Length: 366
Image 1 (cartoon, rainbow, N blue to C red):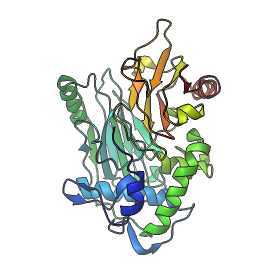
Image 2 (cartoon, helix red, strand yellow):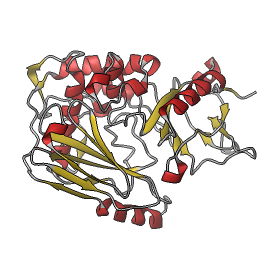
Image 3 (cartoon, one colour):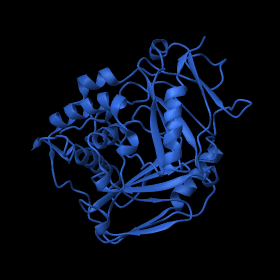
Image 4 (cartoon, one colour):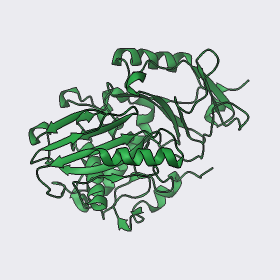
């Protein structure tokens, strides 16, 4: 198992950046903002509930501009490295690609048709999703589609067919076949420099309270009129880069008794959710520590990897050992994110969530 980095983050977050590709990105352990970020400054604007989402997006827009230079994708070719995770509650079922594009001169995106899940999500500095592009689709976007700034973040998710080298080679080719064309190429510069101390303090507060109280589908929006305080802030700080509910429905799974909470051998059995499996929809469950970071080795499963029971249901075990079906590893005070890609409807998946959290508790194995 990997030890939690949570305690470490409190002691080094103001001085120790993560270095990617030999570059100081201004993002520290567990995603804290450092004064070295181009979007932050010790004498910058104080961060509160009204600007913290913009500050979070500015942090990642600036980081990606440092890493890729802008107007180009930076692809994860083998998945996210577990020793250098900067995006909270990362998903490991699809391989990520990242980009910051100038939209002021227009932007076009196209994905070739394919039989596996792949999307390009486009959102602005308010974390408003303005487009989600699927295989076989193209979209043309313009400056008026965003509510703030001249740049957008492109977050691509590409599902491998298999996780061996053959499957990863196929996945990389699909990443490279996605076409993006921009009419302008000005590099991203945050219009505001934010003060890191107030940002990190409020961010930590939202992370620790949001896992228990946030309603996730109220946080990820494609229309600013749908924003609901404080869900908008808690959700976008706790799961930055998430999709609106009609594209992906997320809900948190927590221990159902004190033994499970302590990490003792536990289990849960549930029915598969209603998803658009014919469009390569799928479900996944990823285990995190109390603050939303991966800290164990066997930390996730999904509808492609998990072994079903004879009746089609699924039983997952937690810290029970390799002799148990679908066994995952958890730490004390763990939580998990249940992702449901391409639900048949928001109403159906909300009903499924309610049924899951009330009737399917993760409890100590008898």
